[in-house]
Length: 294
Image (spheres, rainbow, N blue to C red):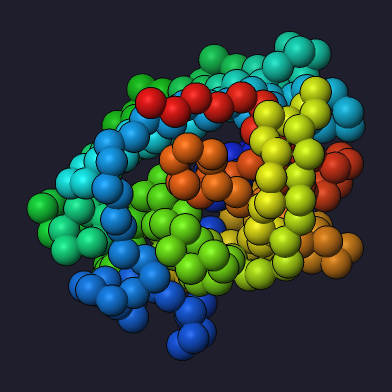
């Protein structure tokens, strides 16, 4: 349960996160617009910004997890960092924490990752994955340290990595697309070091959200359904655990994961402000509980 709650909440950033097919021709994607010269994916930041976003994730009415998303956005470079940790009784029973960091630059409006690092700790077991990219955005090396075992990989099949992004850069591309179009639409290709998948957004209307003791956000937000489409590198076991297990459960109950995206006042940047997932353990709801912008 602890791992399921943790991974479900990270879908908020995509997914957030550790989350995973052909892309319909009408959708924006890196495969269709490799130069992004005139696409909805174009990254355009006029003023340097640092956003510090805090999220509280509730399961069964209890706070199960706290997460932060820090976004450093500039004209020519970007950096994102996500930290998450289980809380309260659930934290005592299922001690889990993780951090995800990506840095990169822009090239003709395209986001180009440089280094992506994922660190997961479950009880006393820690797994670290680092992916290094070349100046053109092609992955050069993936290093995984799982306990005392270190694995380095340099040769990747094109079906796994061609025109893909790391998880957090994929999330930023998704947010940038919504910012540019005021619409939830697109398939955003991600490679996590082992598997390739598309993060898919679809419109589900708009909703006026009110601030509360749970949420700091007030204003109009886009409702989006969020699904992950496996493309390559998945095993049969992958279909039965993590985000895909949650997604299969929601599909069976006709309640797809829903993500609310809104613009932060004073910045215009689109960010996740709420998410709701129906898991086998009950509803998991995430709220933007606090935000700061520099």
